[in-house]
Length: 343
Ligand code: SAH
Ligand code: SF4
Image (cartoon, rainbow, N blue to C red; front, side):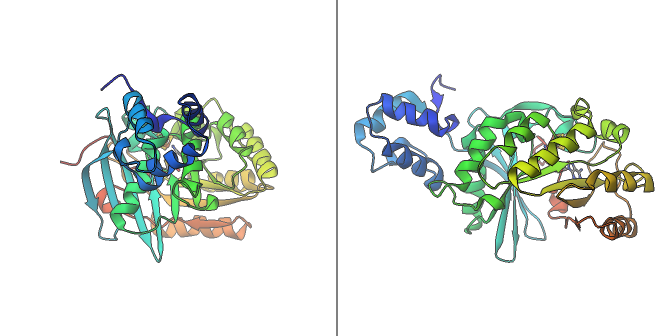
């Protein structure tokens, strides 16, 4: 790689500073953002409404990378999984999920992940590196281009922990939302975190109406510690308090993700703890029958048990849905994304 800086790693404020330093008027920032993210040009020379000397100076100072498609798999249900090669050769995955007039793109915020959740393929490989804002935007835009469809929803549920890469992830959400970027409604942009409390606290103060999903997976401390060793330091009691504050400050409800693992978090005691955790918290539970990951040794409960777990939550007044799995046949479902290239 060259020693030049990656222009798509800059946030808007830093881009404004660069534009100012180069003696250009402030409206050039919007033009640049549009070229980079809405249109996705691959060279500064294609930015035809910018003065040519400005383009040349940008070219001399920055690199402009676009992920290259290394592999694509299509599921029998229409879900598509993409493997991208980034500017430095690092690989990352995204998933496109079409459904009645909607197109949801699940994007990665890191290559790999350091959190080590026991049921997750991404966690098994450890963290490779954080992704830049542009690398997140590009995944979403390129999937939309491949489908030839408007992107209606974006979810940060691919590889990585978005709040372990907070600034770049939030800037990406903003650009996905911006009319100069991808123009996706803020409420249709969801960030999923394993529960890094400082990140949730910051997120509560963001003015946009983005949706927050938190991976809970168990409301029993010992079970959660075992399933999610990376967040052992953030106790359930603190998580609950932080979520109460989030709801109060944002006025938004939170989604709690709960991957059901047979014999681990589907017992009556687990159910009771979950109901207690949700009492007085504006939330919605999304049950995910755990997806198979080789080497994880985790199995999903039978359909009957899943249904029963869901019914009992609903009967206790907890809003609950069971996530329909998509793309399992191509390992594109939750937790199945890894660094491995399909042979
Ligand atoms: N790191 C973030 C976002 C990416 S994972 C997080 O953990 O929230 C997206 C969702 O998939 C999370 O709820 C995660 O716990 C869940 N998940 C991971 N592995 C899974 C598996 N094997 N089956 C079902 N869901 C899984
Ligand atoms: Fe990381 Fe999320 Fe996977 Fe846990 S579930 S290892 S936080 S990507």
